Image (tube, helix red, strand yellow):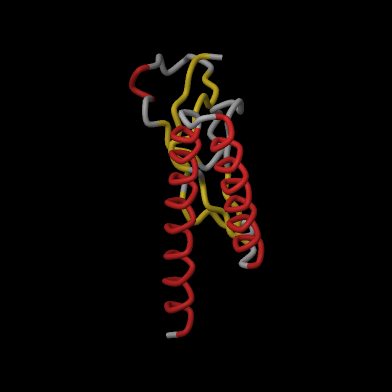
Length: 119
């Protein structure tokens, strides 16, 4: 029973971590439109929030996997959302992360969702 409870908490923390990462990414896009003095403060707050997320994940032996620039070769825990746009023989690289992977030690809790492009 305890393992299932721990697994549920771990899964919930993974989902919240991904949502928090996505919110920070959206915050960065919005901050780009702010006047310079307000943008600097917003960027500082975002850095602080990213550090807090990384620290919380580290305490749980978890991390987010971001794979921009890496080859799509079947070894990464990713789902290529635009795979149907490319020839199956084309060499692809990760162009953008839509959702990061969540890793706990050597386990993949959630695969990343990415956009790939030809190398």
